[in-house]
Image 1 (cartoon, rainbow, N blue to C red):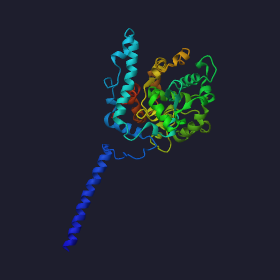
Image 2 (image 1 turned 180 degrees about the horizontal axis):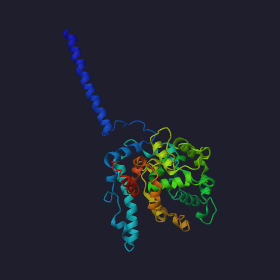
Image 3 (image 1 turned 90 degrees about the horizontal axis):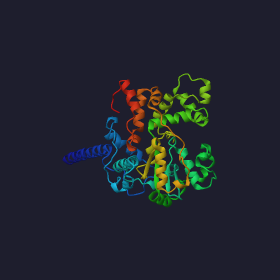
Image 4 (image 1 turned 60 degrees about the vertical axis):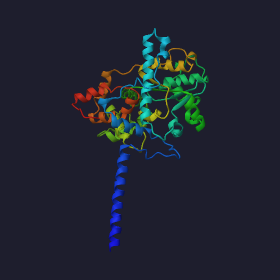
Length: 384
C-alpha cells in the first residue's frame, strides 16, 4: 500500500512540473521571446516575415507613438558623401531624405527580421513582381498604382527591343501586355542566379502614401468605367456581399462599387486567409519583402521625377532616356481625400489603419492627418 502511495505521489509531482513546463512554453511563445520555430534544417519555402513585422510593431507602437525616421544609425550618409553638392542645399536635403528612408527601413528590419528566412528561399510566386535589368544591374519591385507604368516604360525602352523615339510614347497597354514579354522577372532564374543578383544588383522600390494609393486604386479599378476586369472579378462580388437590395444591373455589371464598400471589402479580406490580397491593394511589406531583400533605395510617388532620376544616375542608365523621365503626377489634396474617407465608418477606418500601419512605419510615412481629423470629429479616441 505504501508503495502504491509513493507511486501516486511521484506521478502527481511529475504532472505538477509538467504543467509548469507547458505553461512556461506557452507564455514564452506568446510573448515571442524564444525562437521556438527556428531550425538548422530546411528553411521554409514561404515568407512569414510579415507576421513578425506586424507583431513587433503592434507590441511597441500605437498611432500616437509613430516611429520617427532613424537618422543616426550606422550606414547613413557621411559628410564626405555630399561635399561636392554643398552649394546646392536643396539637393543635399533631398539626398539626406532618401538615405534616411532606407536607413530607417533597415534599422527596423534588423530588429524584426525572422531568424530563419532568406530572400532566395522566397517562393517563386513572391518573386514575380521583381523585375531584372541585367544590362544595368537593377532589381525593381513593381507596385501597382505607384508609378508602375512609368517604370515599365523605362525598363522596356532600356531593353532596346522596342523601336520608339521616346519611352513615354508607349501606352499603358503596350508595356503591361504587348511588350511585357521583353522584361525578365527574378522568378525566371535559378536559385543560384537569384542569389547573385540579389547580392550584387542595385535594388529599389517605389512607395506612395498608403491611404492615398487606395483612393487611386478605387478610381482606376472601380470608379473608371473602362475597368471591366475589376468590375466583373471584384465589383460584382463586393456589391452582392455588402449592398442591401442591389439592382440587377449592379449585380450583373459590378461597375458602381462605392468607396465605402471597397474599404469594407479590404478590411474583411485582410482577416480571410482563404484569399490573398490582390497586388493592387496588398501592403508594401508583403509585396516586396523589404526585410528579406535589402533595398538600396526607396523612392516615393510624391517625389517621382527626382527619385527616378536618382536611380537612373546610380545605374548609368539616365543618358539613354530623354527627359521628362516620367509622366506628370499629382498627389490628391487633403480635402479630396477627406471627401472620400468621410463615407467610411469609423470602425473601418480603425481597421484600415491596423491593416496598413506597418507600411507607414517601415517606409517613414507619418500618421495620416485625414484619418486623424475624421476620427476626432467623430469623437473617437481609442488606442489603435
